[in-house]
Length: 162
Image (cartoon, rainbow, N blue to C red):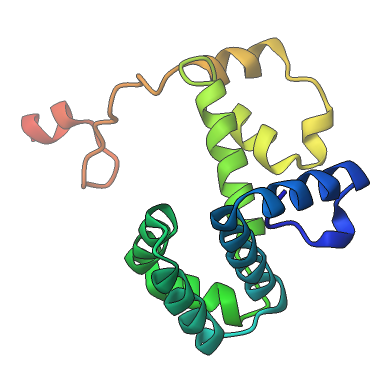
């Protein structure tokens, strides 16, 4: 609620925040810094504004916000990009998260064909699996390794007898 723009808040939320800001000067400073950080991210104001915001946080002396700024330093390049670039890989991360959830939810119960159908949702996915397909998709890859020879396809016994 503190980072949200004023036009996105309800009247009750706005009144509550005004009451909090008037009741304590530390809360007023936190509110101002939170609003500045939210605007910095939404408007993509860049590296320069980010550095100015960090300086303002450090001069505020609020330990929790200083710890937050120190935590931002762990991934400084990503934070700087988030403050200056308009694109994001959020959609990709969301899809990866969905695929991982599907994989975990069917762990030990389904094989690759079913996972592929659930993730890709290709046209065949709308058709129900046959009994044989369900059995194959739930079977773990426990098939024995094949023993192919490098010869012209003759069985090993025939080459040994020759």
